[in-house]
Amino acid sequence: MSQSSIVTSPTAYRVGDDVFVAFQASGANCPQPGRGHDLTVLKIAAGSPPAMATAWCGALRGRGSPVATTTDGDSNPIVWIVGAEGDNRLHAFRGDTGEPIFVSEPLSGLRRFQTLIATQDRLYVGADGRIYAFHF
Image (cartoon, rainbow, N blue to C red; front, side):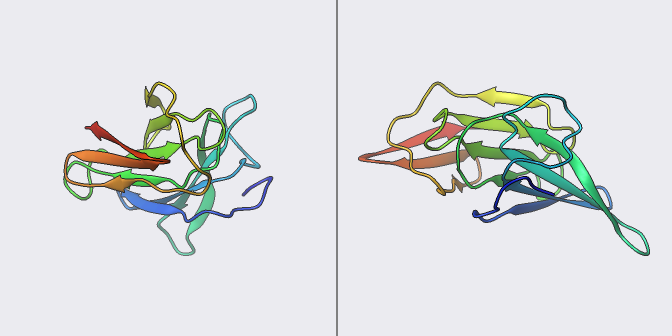
C-alpha cells in the first residue's frame, strides 16, 4: 500500500460499484512511473471476496489530508489535497483516473496534516493568518 507511514485521515468515494480510498503517503505500487507520488489511491473492487489494488498515485510534495467532492454525491469525484510544507499548492485529481486537473499557485502559511473544508461550491484552505477560498 505505502512506502511510508500513513498519518493523515483518508477520504473514500464510489466509482460505480467500486470504492476508492485516498490517503497522503508514498504509494508502494503506483501504476505511473516516477517519484514524488505523495497521494495514493486504492481501489476496492466489489466482489466475493472484494479485491484491493493501487488505482493511481498523485504527484505532489507535501503532507496534507485529502478530501473528495462530487457533483451530486456520487458522480464525477475529484480528490483535493494540499502539498502542505512541501510544494504548498492545492492539487485536484480526477477520482477515477488520477488525471491532474488543477494546481494552484503556491499558498503561504500551510501546515502539515491539514485538511480542506468543502462546501457546495467552494473549498477553503486555512493557513497562518489567512483563509484561501476556491470556487469549483
